[in-house]
Image (cartoon, rainbow, N blue to C red; front, side, top):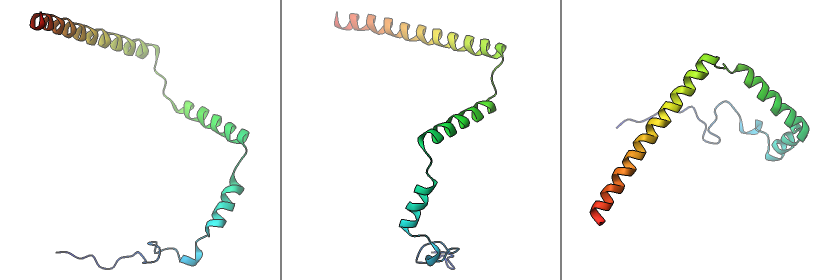
Length: 100
């Protein structure tokens, strides 16, 4: 059986780097959260700025890629439709044969 010795965590908080007296109280954390809160229009503007920044990072497909991807999807859907239709037809014939 193995034992672990020399734990770095303190029994009070589980965080060896912080002293318990240095942690802010719950009331102080709530006040800080209220102080940092922005209005609804500022948050909305920030949201749209972040959307635009993310869309600038997107690598958009070329027209050739788009045509290729579209063709692959359409062919795949047609093949799956044919398989499902064939199974449906086969099961309906089987059920008519079994149940008359």
